[in-house]
Length: 493
Image (cartoon, rainbow, N blue to C red):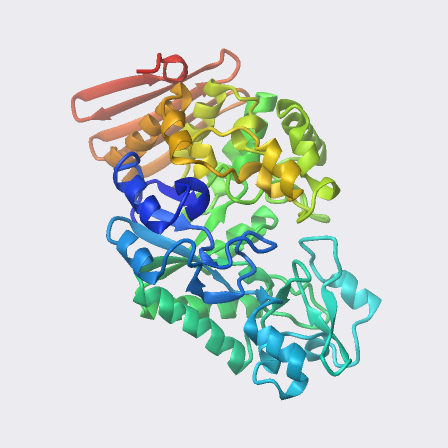
């Protein structure tokens, strides 16, 4: 993986069309910005109940977007990252429909995980309480077979996402087929979606068990054999992320987004500096993604303290609601469908109150943090919350999943803050010091982040008390300075 900025995007929501259109966009208007693109689920169908994360056919590119040849064509210009949806498949998949029709006689009966597979005598209340839940629903959904028999299938997320028995030969074969298809069509990086929930054991949390690490390790080794690397996608307590990072290729730094928001809203960089001192170096850094802004990653868990205290978490969440004019409140928790217990749904630009200066500071901090940066397409264009889409779908995360036409993509690039962000992306991609050694210093309201390699150095200095931020860089005798205030207020060309 190149140490340069990557893009995260839905094919249709960014390009306004399909894979060939996205290919054209990345090789023309957005040329030179991104070394890789994470294509959010492009499998059939892209418009299921969870925006493609509930594939009916994980091996079929949605025909509305194109085909595998189009994916391969895009891979000739940048590395492709794709989701291996490890934990589940759609209740509308041919395999599960076959199970409903034929029950235990179905060839796919063992592909899907049932309550009886883990709890032959049925689950007790105490066992159910021990299971780590990403959402407030029960972990099983009763499905009625054609015979009239009712069976409790494991559904970690929604009743339309039926968990796969990844330890059974049928489950292993299912994942192998998808891996092979990825390798054959130019995919270089695999995001292991919801892999932390894949292994279940009675009398456990059924989340990130020792057996889960073994499973992820074996899956990663197989991907390596096929010429691909893997990313573990896990929202959890920050110490879990540190532990996971020691055992996988790369993880996401999901603690960074709330810590940056806290720093800018509370004028307090201490939690951020603490995290930058201990954070995994083998990570992808993000501020926003197709999901909401993770809170659990910076907060406490049980008797384990967090990077932020409960009161700081409460203040942070309220600041997001205030900065977004209450829109994030309408999209978060029980206020909207598809809810998550640990996320606030809001565009990052709105979470910062549409403050261009703060937005560029946030991106600069991300780009200077250890790891490979990813920029979400809505964040690239500093998009506001899509309140109309939320109102239409009543899916909380749609508030930050806008559909952009080619005309909108072009016009948004004329915004000063977007031009400033693109300038920061180019700087992050080109400066050799980012391949060197990292240091962080400061405290209270001031922060300095420095990268050094031989005679090259680049530093970000932020003073929230005086509301100043600048980047100074040197390569040999060539020195430059960039004031982020000027960058945020520079007249559009």
